[in-house]
Length: 40
Image 1 (tube, rainbow, N blue to C red):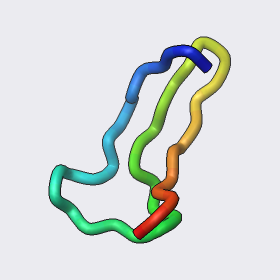
Image 2 (image 1 turned 180 degrees about the horizontal axis):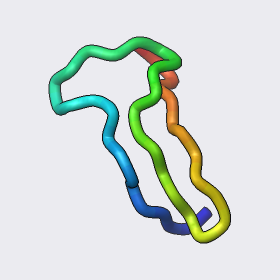
Image 3 (image 1 turned 90 degrees about the vertical axis):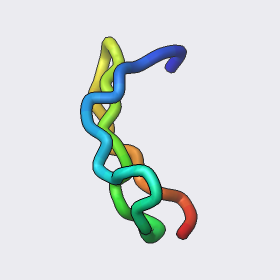
């Protein structure tokens, strides 16, 4: 993947999150994917 569009930010700036929480939804020309947090 070289570029994509952020469709939705699921967390606000400064908001706490845990590993596995979905941080954003990203769309490329071939697919849409949910991007999880890899660390707390």
